[in-house]
Image (cartoon, rainbow, N blue to C red; front, side):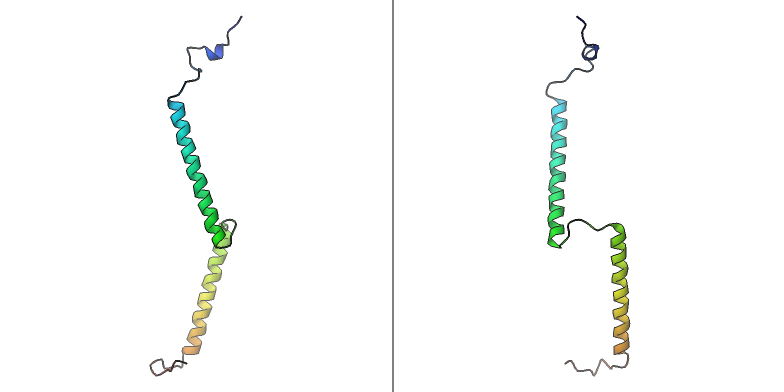
Length: 93
């Protein structure tokens, strides 16, 4: 009978019992659990604001541009309407 060389070459490929592999697996398992918990918290936060996922960078950039345009328009509108008003003697209605 021939022995399988793969498992017997100087003991290189033999499975270890306990020890380092178990501690590595525990570390990976903890990291996976932490990642899963982080994902759940992210989903929960997104759900609170009515989203299923984060917007892409391009959508975020477009929203930022819209926000700036609205801010500028409101500033111009306010300046236009308050240009001739004396704020020191104005009455609040």
